[in-house]
Amino acid sequence: MTKLAASLTKSGIGFNRHQQIADLIGKTTLSQIVTQALNARHASQHPGAEPIAVFVPMDGYHLTRAQLSAMPDPATAHARRGAEFTFDGPSFLPPGTAHDTNPRAILRHATKDPKENDIAIQPGHRIVVFEGNYVVLDKEPWREAAGLMDERWFVEVDFEVARRRLVGRHVKAGIARDEKEAGKRADENDLVNGRQIVENRVRVDEVVVSRDDESWRHE
Image (tube, rainbow, N blue to C red; front, side, top):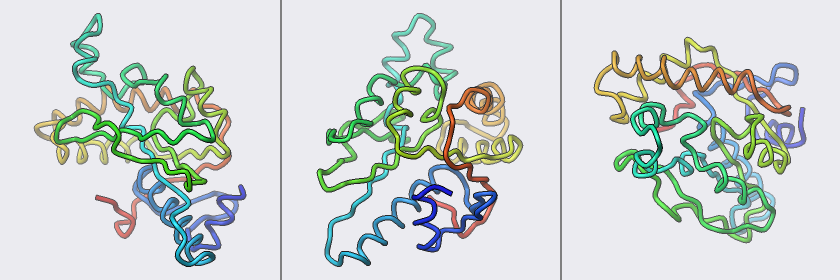
């Protein structure tokens, strides 16, 4: 068990020493809870102190729809949005440096494009929790960024479970009009991306098995 996982276990996060199992919905939930637990633990030890951890999702590194439209095959680019090549990998790399405090973007599903400078990494933030599909992908520039991380965690989920979650998420977010369209997108894009990640990942420090527990659901 890594130093961070051991610390979080003391804070009440449900890890099993041998299987690293947590009851949760997915990587975003885990990242948010880890960040909150780190800040809560720091606050209990240093009352009145500023938060020590910040959460940065990879969604903010999506290429904009205008950038996808400018690609040689815009139809494929839009259809495969969420694939590795539809992210701004070079922009993701600099945040891995220890003293980078530039604001980060976040994806707004209402506009379907990233909103620049929406997440601030402050000088007092000593831990940055990055979350996203490609943070451990064994391909540049993600490989180099992964090498800058102190710890790399992988959330493992059964593909059938992932498909069910994706269908509901796509409909709720307005990405798909109905479950049929959402299922087609999951089969032809999301799960294809998932297999790429599973089959081509760098070494990780923790594997967290994702299983359903409504009490951990995030909005």
